[in-house]
Length: 399
Ligand SMILES: Cc1ncc(COP(=O)(O)O)c(C=O)c1O
Image (cartoon, rainbow, N blue to C red; front, side):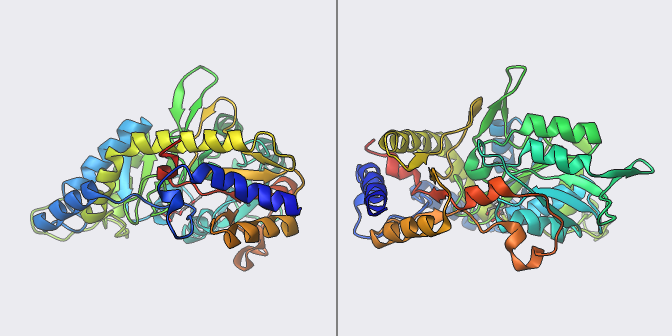
């Protein structure tokens, strides 16, 4: 074990020390945004325009750019990913008292968005290959449901299964085609939590290169400060459905009816629009997006190489048939062990490498202790074996 700790620290250092950032006299962070002159220029332009809030030219420009990257027909900018996911669930028909199937291995927002939509998360297992929702676990969960008047019901809770919300873990695409096919069999909409996966693609069975977040009925991508592209706080809702796209914009902008001076609103809606100031920052980031993607990939390849021959730990590569954005690079213990994982985390932190574990499993969070769940063996093993490595794009400069 002493060896593995030293090996992990030394091998991370071997990669990050090739860059200026990795040699600064301060700890190496998990992920840092790159904020430079371009961001300042666009934000100053926005300030000078005085359009700093929910109206302004940068917002539609950002939405267009995201449509271009993802191929989604509609991208609606919102103030953060969590509310974006809440609205994406609402648009898919999730109502108060429903149940939504989510992976237990995810960030808290995946479950919280379900709760904010008035529903209850139903936690299922992950799959070791992609670290995302297991199609087998989904099949098993759905097979246990009953049909009442054409509605899919969890017989144990009596609640309707209103949606399935898989997540693309650390940017690696989940088995989304298979999940969508299973969901379609049961007539349940898929709402993708694509928070982490801007720039991640799947090669579909028909050979099409399709962006994550464009498979489900609706989805969300986050632009939090720790994501591959940031707006400070922000996100987008994606959909290919024209009516849902229109409603997403309407519902996130107080459902105000267009009029020169009248304040007439036709629904109880939200004020979730992304401010122009944030969109200005995001546009500057998007100008650098191709470089960020390239740097993430080069960093991943370098980690992949240094960990190739290490016994006990392996680098987590993108799943076959996908192109991951490698938002966060990770290594995985051959033998899951929370104690060993934590020793490694401690050794890295002692060495100034601010690595992170995965999130605590959602079904173990106190708010969700009594939520419905399946067997969760793979997620439990992943939680006890994964360590996220420093993944700031600039760490690849010099590789
Ligand atoms: C998987 C996942 N879902 C949802 C979110 C929520 O996004 P935000 O922080 O923009 O609210 C995040 C990231 O923060 C995330 O990683």
